[in-house]
Length: 373
Ligand SMILES: *Cc1c(COP(=O)(O)O)cnc(C)c1O
Image (cartoon, rainbow, N blue to C red; front, side, top):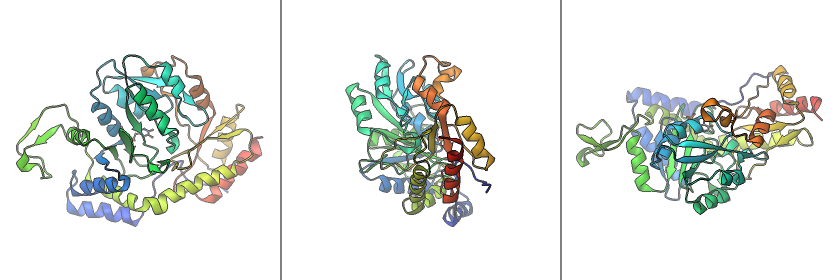
């Protein structure tokens, strides 16, 4: 049997289509009532008094969170090297230096012991990445940060819906960033959000997402560009469009009862299909993880052979991620981070999205069983 699917893709139905049509017919595509409503829905979803600020991408959410920390050039941010390039670029655009840290090979998450070795007087923030959706030992991350007086910006791009000890990622913490790009656990087409409990920070991020414009009190509640305003700080054009917000509203409505359940069930099915294979190392993930991707490690130099066999049956695979410290801009491989380098040489991501069927998972399992010990 030959499959045709992708490693990751959105699941789009009548609700999303109706939402887009509604906004098209309104002929208002800026940031307006749909975005306001989506933000409110996110605040209700996360609860705990968190404020949500919607932006145009997850990368912008990270950039504006770091921007809110008023970092100076030369300040350092500790970040795991195993992440999407966007995490590193969001740090470097502020003028701060991303300090790449090694990972725990059993999870793909930041290794705090390695991070501790890289602390300097210039270290200002910790930027953990909830790789594959797993927040890992969230308490340990925050204890480490408070012991060293660091702010914490969480890259939760993979972790929408995941919980830590029963609490949603995004309902706790300092600054938590989500991505709603086309393949994430929920999508807006493109989009992102910052979650924070601090009202002043939420206001500041809301301002700078639209050029730093401060409306006069008399026009503060109008949606359109104000006739009179002031600006005191550098801003950006990072706001969310109502077209994107309408898609996000529909996805959020489908999330707990459908999209999340499918992702969690697929992960369990993969775990079972790969059980007992000594050359396949599955990742340790917390119980409350809603997986964004399903990476495994293929041992004994057999990753590329496994990859080829899967591709032969139309099962696409991915490599998440090329360690950022290996890129010229971020150190060109120095210093060496051996766990992450080995992880990347063994990593293989199998397809996981709401439209992957159980037959694909079973087939992937039997292909790997044929060629591995
Ligand atoms: C997707 C992603 C981002 C960036 O989000 P965009 O919405 O694509 O800008 C950042 N970090 C990680 C780990 C991601 O997967």
